Image (tube, rainbow, N blue to C red; front, side, top):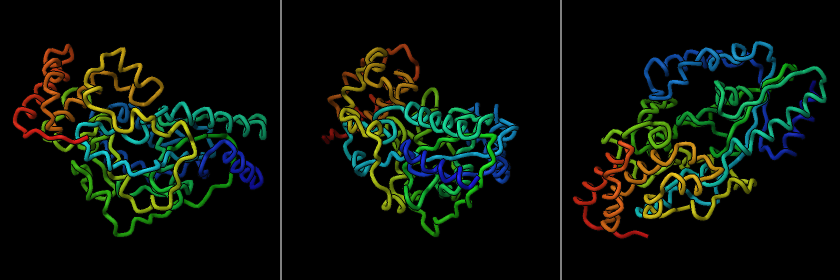
Length: 351
C-alpha cells in the first residue's frame, strides 16, 4: 500500500493539487464535541443545514460506513497581491479573493473525480466518494488529521507551505491506505487574525461565531444585516479576507498556478455605481460561472447598498433612492439605511 500511496501523490500533483494527505475515516472523533458545542451556542446562525445533518458531519463513518481511508487534497488560490488594499477605496466594492473568477467547485471536483477513477483502476472493486464543500463533511479536521496543516485561531486551515489560501477536496474510499501524521499547531502566540476582525467574530482563539462574521453576513445571512454590523462591513460586498490575509504563514505561499482562480479584471475592484444598478438578468450575466452568483441579485445588491452607505459618496444618492421601492424588502430597507448614511456624512471622494 505504501507504493500505491506514493503513486497517488504523484498522480495528485499531475492533476494540479498542491498538497495531499491521508487519514483514516475514523480519525476525527475529537471533532464531535466541538461541533456539538458550536451548534448548541447557535454560532452557525441561519445555516440550519449544519444541525440537520450533524450526525453525518461529525462522523465520516456515519456518512459512509464502508469508508476506510480519506484522501484530503489542497488546491491553492493564493492571490498575486494584498487583497486588503482595496478596502481603502470606498467607491469600489471588495469581493473575497476566492470569488473573483470561476467557482472552485467546478474546478476542484473534476480533478477529484479523475484522481478517484485512477485509484479505482489500481484497485479494481474498490469504491470512492468525492466531496467539495457541498456535503456534511468536516473538511478542516480531516485535513488536519491527514497532515495538510492545522486549524488556526481563525478556525481556517493553515499550512506551513501554502499559508491560508487553498481549497480542500476529499476522496472517501474503501481502499486501506497508510495514514499520514496529523498536522501540528504552529500559531504560537500570534493573534493577528483575531485582532483584525472588524466585527469581533472570535469569542476566543479557535472559536468563530458565524453570526458576527462578515463572510457569513454577506453570503449566508438572509434578510437585513443587523445595524450594529453595517459600518464594519465597509466596502466588503461578498465575503471577507481579513483574517486570512494577515496570517504570517502566507509569506511562504506562492501565487496560485490555476488561471481560473486569477481575478477577472472587472471583479478586482468593481465600482459600486455599476453594481447597484444590476437587475437580475445583468447580475447573472456578470457573475456567470462564479461563486457570487449563488447568493442572487437581491442579497448582493443589499450588500452593495451597505457599502454605498459607508462610502460617503453623495453622487450615488439617485441610485440609492431608486431602490427605496425595490420589491425585495431587504434591498429597500438597505437603501433607506444607505440614504440616511449619505445624508449625514460629509462628501468623500476616493477612486
